[in-house]
Image (tube, rainbow, N blue to C red):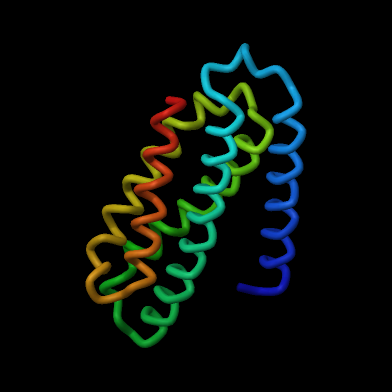
Length: 144
């Protein structure tokens, strides 16, 4: 992870934390789910980004050595990272678009989980990414 990525992640996590604190003081009775669900979802999305970034770096190293067997894994993680970054932002604010966006996220997370599971026995970073995707799907289904 580059310094720029680290700073970006830190600022996003700070925003998520602040939004969670602010939302705890507000009346969320008009939402189908609670602020706690949004907080859990934002946390899961952050883990997907973190583990996905580690998986992508690992895939790039393998690809650079000439081994193309992990190319589809890299492609699926490349899709996952920006989708989960957006998910984290929407969940942190309790966006009214979150429910609609959840369907896309579930699809992307499932595709990534399936690809990463193909390599999970050989590469622990792929297993960690797949596990993050699986947990994110669980949280997404609570609002979908």
